[in-house]
Length: 339
Image (cartoon, one colour):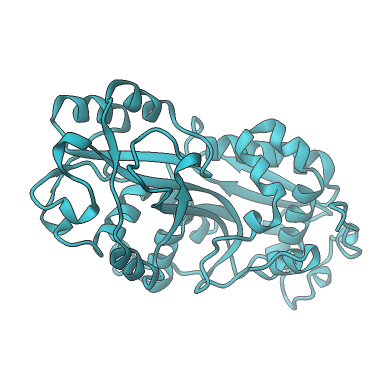
């Protein structure tokens, strides 16, 4: 199917509440801009992150190419703050990882005492971060069942990757008895080399990009070993709908030693763009359509945006237990993407 989509017939005439097909939505129209333009407000994370830079690329392309919506892409203090601002009505879209979204929807953790007032819905898969655990081969720590009593850095405190890793490790034997460290990513390589940490992390972005600190890790630790996730642990994880993970070929995730393994299980911290159920379908559909029609330009703004040209990526890894927004559903149906 050609990437070029026919423009929505109805959106060009936006300016009246009836255009949305909703009774009494004049106030919502004004909130989204009114007067012929829908101003969508979106926030991801801090201005120095790939997440924010990608959103700036989306805004630049959409604002140039669409005659019916305008995207205001803003920085924030992080994904959790962005989601809170969206719930308060200060944003129309935000992003977070699917584990945090699960907690929001089910009012778990911090959301038990301070739940969201609005219903969140999924729009599209933004990117994902793969996570592995690395030891020194000489330590004798070979699998995630060997962590009891060991000093482990399961990603920095406060990161979504740590939450996802710890949820995965809750399925392993003895992981609840490990000594959890609070190291920054830039500290992990030296901590592993000097023996201050027995196990540290390895992360990749979209299973393609390797952060510089990970490259440094393998340049100074010559016997780095990627921990194995035993089959029974993986099967238990697969039954946990809070988290995602996948097997990746060793040839695509180079750096640590794998022994005789040709692949290994990695955690997937999946980031998705969310909106509220109250946001009309047409602006969300127009946003996705405009992105799809201009994927080459989006990729020029940030390399990670190139993954969106694959419709299976754009609609992939969404949480099956969280509703898909009607505007996104219409778009994915039109391009033949599964969700």
